[in-house]
Amino acid sequence: MAFSGTLFGVKKSAIYDALKYSIYLLLLLNLFYFTFEDYMSAGHRFRDGIEWSQFTAAFAQAVDSFAWLVLLLMLELETWVIDDNNYHGVVKWSINGVSGVCYVLIFFAFLGYTEKLNFVLQFEESNITQACDAIGTYLSYAIDIDEFAALTMQTCSSIGSAPYWVNVQSNIIASNAIHSDMTVLGYTEVINAGAWLLVVILLWIDVYMQMGRIQAKQYHTISARIKVVLYSILIGAAILWGFYGEFIDFWDAFLWIVAFFFIEMNIFQWHEEINVVTPATATSTNAADTNQ
Image 1: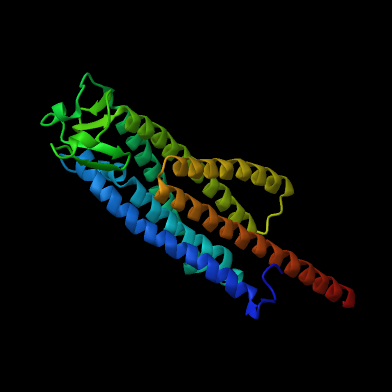
Image 2 (image 1 turned 135 degrees about the horizontal axis):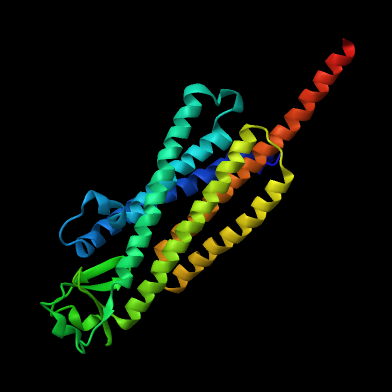
């Protein structure tokens, strides 16, 4: 077994669990950060208040992080914590129910990212030549896609040089360089969220097949190839965030990739255990048939 034995006197399974749950804890801390960031950003983007229909657009990162973290824990229970013999009845339907809610929230978070991208695409190039001339007309300026500040005589000189882009609906102004970055990062968030949706669909199929003891080598080969492409996209998004100086987004993307690597390892170990148990069971059955 992959996690049998010890390493420096400590069980490998204990080291594996410690590393895994440390990653999960760091993701929880990121959830708090993204909730605060969305809250601060929403005050500038939604000046007339947030309606229920706009909630996921305003708190896309927070909803996304929360739903993924809960879903991650459900996958951890399914693939590692709960014994197969105990996975039935209330336990099974409770996990499936919570996971179902998470899938819905993740989809709405994806729509929230598309709304944020639409917010960025609503910016129009203006004929303003000096940022300080926009005071009174525009109330905020963009620092990045998720961070804004009040436009005042004290802050207008730090916006950057013309040409400027403006979002009339939200009363926000952005320099050309910042608007360009916002556009790239907006598309990156949507592509990243879409790739994660596909990853979790494949993982759901993997878990379903494991639960049903369904063997399909061709599917696993195709699934593995698709996952290579999807994880490459996710790694590319993380690198892009790092390149644009979005450290927390880079760090969060890295943690999620590692977290789902652990889920993949859970499934691999689970698959190994089934392959060991099944032949043994089959041998015992055959022996019994012979004795009869």
